[in-house]
Length: 308
Image 1 (cartoon, rainbow, N blue to C red):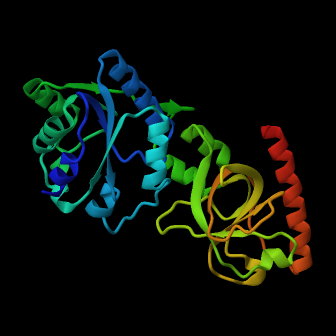
Image 2: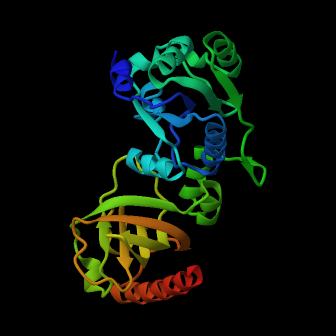
Image 3: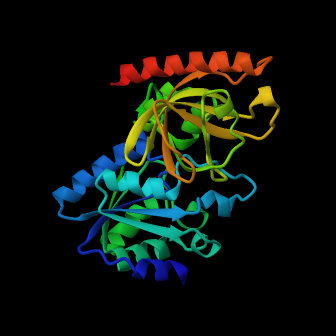
């Protein structure tokens, strides 16, 4: 069984307190739950652990309804480690795993991860047909000697914080709401790939980002961003869209780093989205576009100064 092959390679140094989920975006609701996980693990001398999945379970359970993800697996792992999680178990979500009963799944966690306790959200369920809700898990916990704690929903302005809510705000370009719901700025990590160098000809060279399929993006427009490259941060203006002035038709993400000198091709960038400056628009000429980009850059400079 593949799940056992993956779990057997993880050898916790002591018993664990675990939470389970995809943790897409590692948003404010996730952080609320993780804070409690770390607190209890410290009090009870347990390892704090997270069991997560790749790919997203919905890609297997509902393949026709693919979700765009807020953060890739690598970025999720870094975020979780920075939050103090001691153990991260990444399980391949397969049809075989989806058919495990709740009892079979938690038995594997007991056996391989030395699970002593489980912390879950209010809507959590696991196992075939989502049979393993809070009530069943408590029953299994009494039988198999592990505790179950159900956290109340985490809300902001009366809304329960969920990844779906963040995706909606992101698509609308509402970066203030996205930041509030995530507890941080939304960010993209991607390599710079070759492009047509139009930005350079306009006097504003841009780095064209290689966005992975399935990545959720802010709605089309121009954004004030902060871009990190090789450990250094630069104020930047980032455009998402189809570049209607040039009728390219292909959606791109390209960023202009202020005060950066050098060749970015092939380098890994991390772009944090701070504020939407404007919608994408078509200009009558390259000169009009160049004039607007100058205005965009000036706004970016003002926002960057305010962040310092």
